[in-house]
Length: 316
View (cartoon, rainbow, N blue to C red):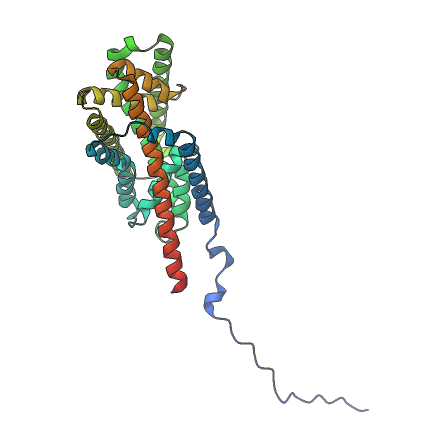
């Protein structure tokens, strides 16, 4: 009986070259692209929103009486940058952010002004989420900063209302006064409810929350004082004390949730207090248009810087 004889192979196929260890990373650890895409979509929405607001009625405000005093522009810029600078101080303490965070914080402010509420916070969360090497859990910090900022604004509005409403109630229609009072009560009750459940709401340490509160209080005070100084330089016939009173009323009206046409209400209130209806309306329109113009210029500037940085990386 013949047996099959199996010859041993004279050579074995060469093993495939081992893949480098860097290519063996789990798929789950690869950086996801959704934060960058969200930030890009919100940036495009900001540009569209600023363009619509500027070309809709902003340019008409810029064509009105232009303040000749350089003091107006100096204090206007100080008022404009009060918010992003204070936000930078806050996140510098929380995350030790680099200077590159300042453009993102400006976009956060612009989105909150132009788009729907808290869209700027969503943008900044996406910006931080795309930089996980810088911060591990950005959602809790962004949420806490937004909540504390809202509480600070509500508390400031309540204190200003307690001072301003007894002095100016004769200038306000009874139904508007009633709406303002109910708005103040609602804002205060909402803030107290958040504080009551603070351990379940907040993620940051108590000392960090107090730091955010004091910086926000400084920001509100600085923004109010500087815009009052800007208007005083533009219309020196009106005393600085009267401008401070009007800015306090503006801050109060801006924080009340149940009032429609807040800008119109403030403009009418200001005209009743100081007169100068044409000059004052021109100044308010020019200030609003200048804010929109600053939004557009900063978006274009930061966008140009971003494109130049990406071009340098591609060339390198």
